[in-house]
Length: 304
Image (cartoon, helix red, strand yellow):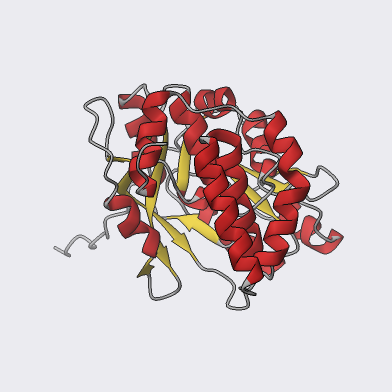
């Protein structure tokens, strides 16, 4: 009697997770966005993907539109910066939205775990993940900063409470994101996350770091020029938009001193702060006292 043929066990394919959409912004980075779409297509969650094309050339747009991930592509006709994520969130039909940039993606299972956390903790507005950088999966320095947050644990939230995050490694509750107003148009891009964290917390939503979730980041070795001035500009503008005048004035004085000393990018940042300051003052809204105390504990300041 012949032996039965040995059949290899087939992997169990999980059902798609219908709770979460991935939102991505991109501009003229065809190879990177296609690599990210490949990674998202391979995820067990098989999330729907919305790509906001911030003014890419036609070849990039067509390559994204034809990708097997079948992303929904929004083309606002101009570079909307981080506000492109707002467009994607408004179009999403799922309760949760995970962000990607065109050089980042999620590890298998992390999106499902993030949705589980958001299901289990109704006050959780945003959860940010541990980020691994490059092909060698190095720890992003921000991981240690978030893990060391001095904010006390809150019994109705998972992970470590924070007031900062990396956008491309974060998942939001759509309702909370829209209530907080999303990413602020005045900042455009570069360090735009802190202001959204402030606004979520001011509206009563929790913002936490959860290292059990993992995002990957493979930045272009060439980088993108001009990021340092944007970061410095937006740091100061964020303070003018939400923090006490004394805090904002001190930050402005530090940037002025840096510009006088000739530090790279400081003069450009200072000029752009001056250009945007009237709009910032018109939209200024102080944080509630409890959120201001939390922000002060994070920036190491004393009484405002």
